[in-house]
Image (cartoon, rainbow, N blue to C red):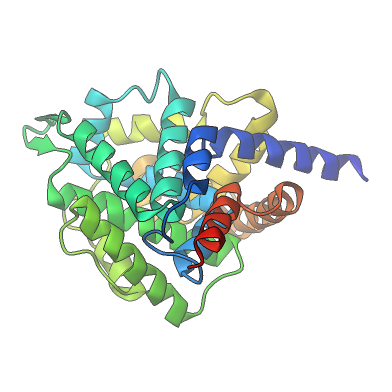
Length: 293
């Protein structure tokens, strides 16, 4: 095997270790229970089990910073700079539990997040009060996350038909209702339009600082080249105007899209080949098979 391919494999495996769901979450997913909020045959299982979800997760973090109240809560109440990997892994654990866990595990994960959010309140630098459990803020976080996973799967994964893209958004709307988001959207077109034309978002100094930190995340050395590819692909999926606001100017044609996305697609393919099926998907499938669902 050629040296460059060996390096890609090692880098992909290293990134997967950093961004994989923790063992306790995977163990809980494998326990006896029902098929969960989505279940076999759902588009959510397909999209969230693919390595392209890493691109979607990073893109979600970038775009979510654009809401001044959301980023104020992160800056004032989180330890993302002191423990960035721990915070990312908690986010991965939440996505895995709500997607692949039983209904009870998913509801427990949502309840735990809402309990933490109860204490995330304050006043943003622009003088407006915020609360993390505000239905409008939850709608921003939810819709950006769903749009980001969908866009990453379309650009760096196998892709979905228009019908399945709508199915995915509709499935995720059920989770949006569960977390308390206001009026979760149910079609891909309405989702993209809602995020793109949201009237209350713009880049603040706090957002630009957070995105710079994300771009240079202090990861293990072996994971940094692969993360740079994934981050570049994620940034290329951010609307050009928002990228300019955040200082995310990528080199190359179309702001790096023609370079970053193929590289990320190749990396995701290598990761899928090396690592095999998603551990969360595998455990969820075994749980459902045991239960006869």
